[in-house]
Amino acid sequence: MKKQAGQAAEAGTDRGAAAEPQPRSVRVVIFALMVAILLAMLDNMIVAPAMPTIVGDLGGLEHLSWVVTAYTLATAASTPIWGKIGDMYGRKGAFLASIVIFLIGSALSGLAQDMGQLIGFRAVQGLGAGGLMVGVMAIIGELVPPRERGKYMGMMTGVMAVAMIGGPLVGGTLTDHLGWRWAFYINLPLGIVAFFMVSAVLHLPKKRAQGRIDYLGAALLTIGITSFVLVTTWGGTEYDWNSAVIMELIGLGVASLVGFWFVQQKAAEPVMPLHIFRSRNFSLMSVVGFLTGFVMFGAMLFLPLYQQAVQGASATNSGLLLMPMLLAMMAVSMVAGRFTTATGKYKVFPIAGSVLMAVGLFMLAQMDTDTSRVTTGVYMAVLGAGMGCLMQITMLVAQNSVEMKDMGVASSSATLFRTLGSSFGVAIMGALFNNRVQDEMTESAGAGAGGAAKVTEHSAQLDAASLAKLPEAAREAYQQAVSAGTHVAFLLAAAMAVGALIAAFFVKETPLRGAAPGDKTPADKTPADTTSADAKPAGDADGDSARGEREKTVAEAV
Image (cartoon, rainbow, N blue to C red; front, side, top):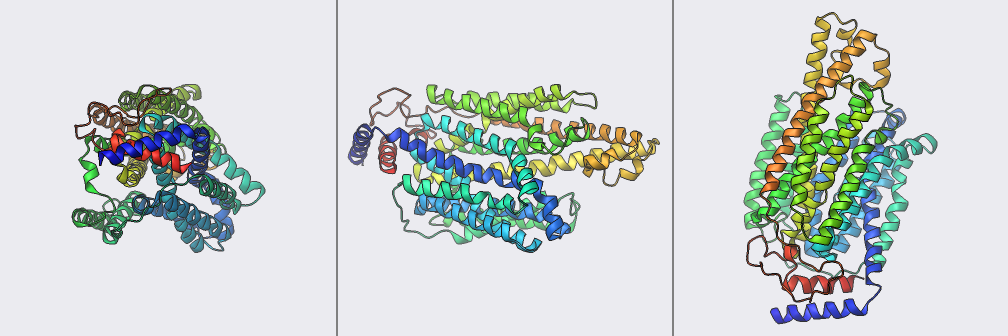
């Protein structure tokens, strides 16, 4: 085994030395992967501004929420399955298949003739989207040594920030000038470019697993994920939290996940191998990722609402409202990636990021009706800096904590936990926000604020146009209520950030292997601490066989 590993490492070193264009080829692959990330991130951002026009054209207002819910459900449910398929049958084929499915869903969504068709085609889109992010992260994990992976993951955060800022602007422009169908058609040229670039440049070794996909486990996991996503989507909106439907969904979700746990222990090829959670770092990063998703998407929902309702900002450029947070997140993520590549150290970032998130959220919780936009922007930048420390470092540490053969399921699991965190964050923060706004408006109505009683029932859903039509006293009462609602929502998020800080303290900093930039580390050199539980996995340490395997893979891939 060691002899083979040494030969593989030597072969990889020789090929790497002979192929000078290799870094350029890797950069071409990375560029194609970034285009795929842009596809996945842009979709919902572009579609959101087109929603009113879509309803006006297709009708079906009562089913509007399902246009987003169908996509989210399909994405969350398919994410772990895509990761497992890539591990078993090859990442390139799985990734290309996800692009094709996503593009088919995009084209069909653009051709939809009624709301039912659109919802179904959005589900197809979501199935493909589930494989896009996982495929990108797993391919980077296979091509790039952990020591150098940080800078590429910083680039991913930059692409995400660009999508979040530019998506609503692009969506609004396309809808106004070309029609809402182009909010879906715009995916086609981007996807085709990514498909052909990956096909032409990336040549990963083909795999053929002996076992079969764990269909029972996949079905149980899908039912469990779907149940809890529906709970967070419907709870407090479509149905009361204590309603029979919500209770039944919770029961179904718990039963499915318990069954999934038993099935995974006996399956030959488990869809989410439970042994990956034996790594302390992987389990801790799953917790941190869940809490980061909880905080991030909750903040992205309530910050624009506060700025529009209280500070009078326009809803048209909703992406621009978040620019201080997103720019800080992008800049810090890139710095964190470069620092990790240069030093091999990473534990400081989960700790610093959690602290910054907690501080930023606590400051945001202090906003009231007199808070200026500049002050809000500073608070948002602090929060964004914290998220920038965490966004990709959590994925890097999670990938580091597993063997190379589990890179796909590790990437998909980390992505799934962040997705579930975002669903729970939006639901729970939303419930607290709505209840506080309702209480404040009821109190204002009882105190005789003119017109407040008329808006109490739907007070948490007022848009800017409706707000402008209210009497001054009622408008002021609503603004005060929104300030109170964001206060409790951000206090909860700050508590979640403290939870992430506690988890980050227990992360064990295993040195990232792979030569530092400019070093000529021998391919078969193994760091001293390869005996601990967290150091052993190949993906974590890039040790003897893993280093040779990766160097050979990179040489073949490009």
